[in-house]
Length: 402
Image (cartoon, rainbow, N blue to C red; front, side, top):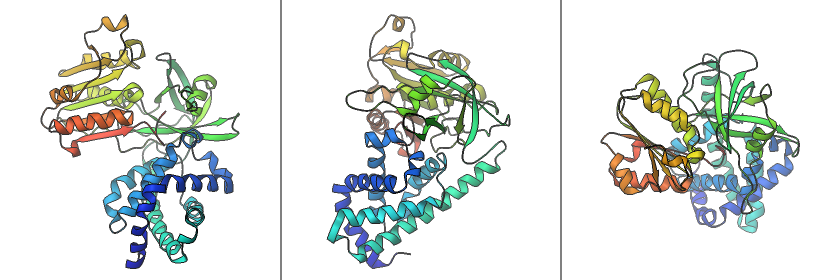
C-alpha cells in the first residue's frame, strides 16, 4: 500500500512523463534488452524499431501515474495488457527484471531529480502494479490450462494448409503437433505465434486474430498480411517470414487464444466495421453469427483499396448468404474492373452520415483497423447515439497484429 507521501511523489512526476515518457521508456528498453538479451526472444523487434512498443508502454505508465490514487479505474486496461502478456508467455518472475531496469532508467534519465525518496515511491508503485498484473495473468493461465483442449505458454502446431487470399494476405491452417484438441475461443480473439528468425538469431512472437469462427476444435486459422518496408519504416519480421519461409508441414509455436475484443452473445443488432486486414476478427464474428444465430440483424462496413485486395471476400459473401437480415457494404478507395461486378461495392470511405444510417437502437458496434480509422468511426457512432459501452474496438498495432 502506497503512503500519502509516495502518492504525492508519483503524481508530481506526471508532467515529466507527459513530456519525456517516450524518451524514458526508450532508454528502459535499450537498457533491459542489453542487460538481459534473452528477453529479445519475448519482445517483438519490429515494434521496437518502429517505436510502437515504447509509445504504448509510455502511455500505460503515464495513465498509471495519473490514476495512482485509484488504480482500480484502469482494471479494463490491466485485463487487456494481461491478456497480451499471456499470449507471449510472460511469467511472474520476469517482473523483477523489468522493475530493476525501470527504476534504474528513472534514475539515469532524471539524474539529480531522481531522489532516493522518489525511487522508493516508484518502487512501491511498480510493485503494486506488478502484483495486480501477476494476479490477473495467473487467473488467465489457470483458465487456459483447465479448458478442454487448453494449454498455457507455447504449444507446437503444424501448418496443415497455406492458402493465398490476396497478393499480400495468406491464411495458415494450424493443427496441434500432438494431435490433441484445441480449446474453443470467442470470435474476434487472437493467438500469438512464435518463429525463429535466422537473420536476427532470435525467436520472435507476433499476435494474429483468428480469422474464422470457432466451429471446430481441432484447427486454428490466422490470415497474415505481408508488411513491406516503406517510408523509412522497417518490413514486418514475423509476417514476412511466415509468407516466404513457412510452408505446409512446418511447425510453429502457438499460444492459447485470448483477447477482450470478441462478439457478445445475444439477439440485438450488430454492426461490424473494419478496414484492410482488420477484416480478420470481424469475419470470425460474422461467420459465427451466420452459423449460430442467422436471424440476428447484421450490417458490415468494410474498407479496402480494391476488390482484389478484399481479403476473405468470398467467405464474407458466403456468410451473408446464410443471414436472414444482413446488409454488406464494402467501400473501395481505388476503382478496379472487379469492383464493378458486385452491388455491395461502393466508392470512397464511410463517414459520419453512413455510420448514422447503421446505428439501430441497441446495436453493438465492433471496429477493427488502423488507429485513425477506428477513432473516426467511434466518434461517428457516438454522434449517432450509440453508447460508448456498446462500441468495441481492436487496434492492429503494438502487441497485436501485423
